[in-house]
Length: 185
Image (cartoon, rainbow, N blue to C red; front, side, top):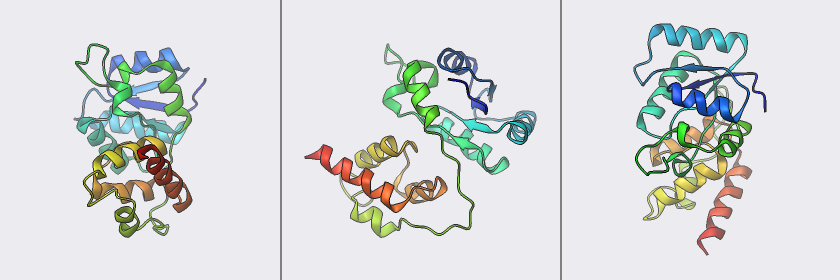
């Protein structure tokens, strides 16, 4: 699988894992304190070939995504569920621990954020009705919705924003909620 866009990862071990799974170029942020030079390289890469942000499913990974999104709008995003990134010894989490097949699957389901002015299809009421916020099982259900829609995990406040940002339609949302409901039976 050859990837045209340049993939932004956190470190050298992530680059090794990406290159093992696909034919792609990477830019490493070397942690969540992204330098101005790194942001300039990412901006240049976005202009030339496009960028896919593929960071770890943890707080520093989310922070890196937010910084890049703020400085280089319209980058694409790939996500992996936490369970797929845990080290074999159970000590550590990251893209570098994911198997090749999971990396390829995440990169084949890349999301491009929508323009800011598009209408919000999924309301907070929809999230409450789907037991994704203000419900005892909300966190577990949000985790599963994030996996099914391949948008990563979010807290209750961020879920609506993430669904909108990646252009998830009401139909896609309903289908994912129904799948979660079926799994719980």
